[in-house]
Image 1 (cartoon, protein in one colour):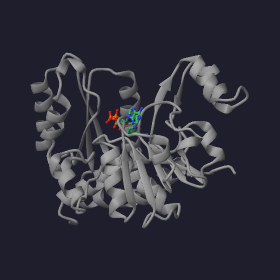
Image 2 (tube, rainbow, N blue to C red):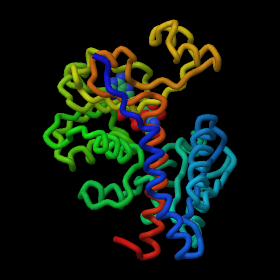
Image 3 (cartoon, helix red, strand yellow):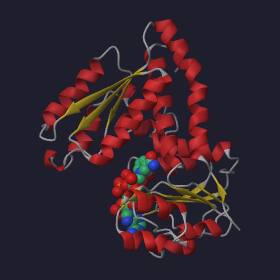
Length: 311
Ligand code: NAP
């Protein structure tokens, strides 16, 4: 068996086309486009790429998309002050603080900065208010990656109600909201993490397996029940040839990309899983583009709510 590919790239494009007329209607009615402010502190290379992609997607759809940069030496107080300025801004409906913040800002800095975002502009769904609303199944702004995964599962006709779902990873941004969204759709959900005993056996009970770990090729066929739907959230930049050679066949496309670029992005799911799973999201081209599509959707929703359209 070769797993069906769950194509996040195509769905993301479809979702963007779906919201484009709503963006135009908002702009016509209010004399300004929906606005997204992205805060980037320092110059982490991966963050630079993510932020560039988000800004480009925002501009393409007709948003005002502003990058608000601070140097790596910025203090916690300066970062919070920037978030508060965006909270007050008439032109910004959504605020995204790119993670990670520089280590020098200290432990707990990220949480304090996220806490400063006005819940109505919290398009990453990370503030305590929005997380609480999600727990109670009445959220409007939900973390982008897990809500993008739900869109993909639902639009791919993957049955969720009654399914056994296993989520590996318990982060605030992916694992926990993923588990809640699946539970709200009536899956029976197990959350696994680094202390889970006999992880492959637990994972192999899943009809829907979501891997959000950040370890290249960690989920092998031993983790996967034949026919299961496997969602690969992981994105690890790998430049170690030995790891690439262990994961990908010499004549594969991924090896070709590695030879050309010297590094490749690798998911948490081992390529051999494609022979066992019923459906699988690719990396790249799976969950990543959906995360951006959901960011656009959340920003439009935040703009509409601020303007009193819905809610
Ligand atoms: P994170 O905050 O580092 O959390 C990783 C989770 O994986 C933790 O809960 C950790 O368990 C668990 N874990 C680590 N090693 C494990 C092991 N050996 N066995 C079982 N569990 C283990 O990461 P994250 O922010 O959730 O992101 C996860 C991955 O998804 C990363 O590769 C990230 O780059 C990627 N990501 C991709 C997108 C996208 O749009 N494609 C978006 C967000 C994240 P403990 O809690 O016990 O430490």
